Length: 77
Image (cartoon, rainbow, N blue to C red; front, side, top):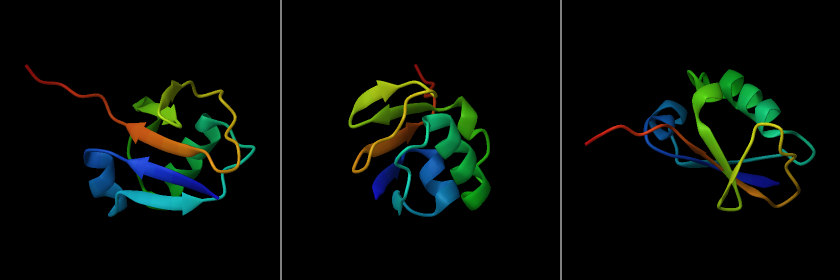
């Protein structure tokens, strides 16, 4: 199993701050597509991802036990 963390507006869209999913062997891009469909998340393809607290690209393959975080862009001044 893998823990997926959601930050900022993503947390509101999902309705919780994290979920447990079977993501081992999938890429970040595949997981984004799956979660967007399951939870109706808008523009998930535009957010940054981290695996085990290190930024990861969409082509990174997830391993069993990895923690994945999705972090939307932040603006402010």
